[in-house]
Length: 362
Image (cartoon, rainbow, N blue to C red; front, side, top):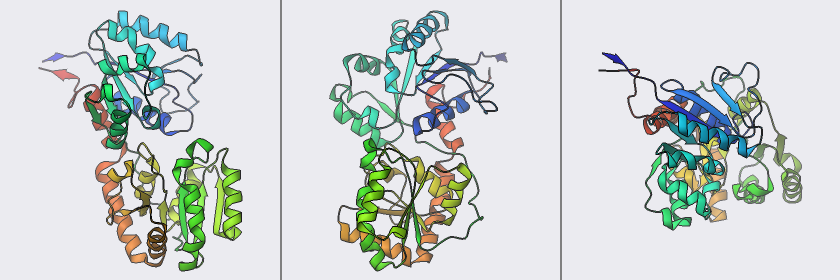
């Protein structure tokens, strides 16, 4: 029995410690890989590890916004690291640093998350991706990427579905049969998330489900416009905006709501659906990446473009607690089986350093 050297992996991201989906998944990637590999984490925009952070023991390097600094690190590492080293890029904006790695025959893995991959890539980006191993958070992301980059359509893309930390559903607050919850950024660039449509439908929903309240958790530069829209179409108490809330308050909102709703057709994945399923809440959405998360009629509802049918389906869900509870319980079971942080870690480790990696080999 001989002791094998742990593989060396560099996880490079734009940020690890700011709010956001890519940042969250980047942190998860470091936590997952450090169990089986010698990991470094390179951050383009972060400047330090927050005090007491669980990743404080990882070797971080901070470029503080200096692209050239990260490029210098990559060039040096490509020349000094061994041939089994892996560079994992968590954002397409970082592809330039992969060039010296590819030139030295080193392995590069690029994780595709969503909208940043749904555009025609530049020639340099296409060069890197044509020679890298590609991961995507959903089949929807992979399909959109291939559609908009036909030169890369034959490049294999492996699906690595995301996950979040498990926690038992909260029992702090009694479920309100009248609250539907949305959790989302409220920025102008994210209008594809369907907030306008949901707010405009709310008077008709409320007519069929008296007292139905939509609670929108989140902040952004489009909040003021959305609040004005809500005031124009429905009673003030019918649509409530909380702004940004603490993690503890967010858990309480998931506990209180009757179900979760987000009518977004352009999610790359949708971590908020996992948060709702973790809390044993039914999910309501439309066609998109969430098709791989929400089982229509089993863990939630997938609505079509017909507004009248959407209103009827949402109003019926308000009225039928037994069905809500059944959908939510099914969602909780699906979450535990497929979408925990540990399940994501297993998938990521298999793709990046090989399935069943151990510290010892015969």
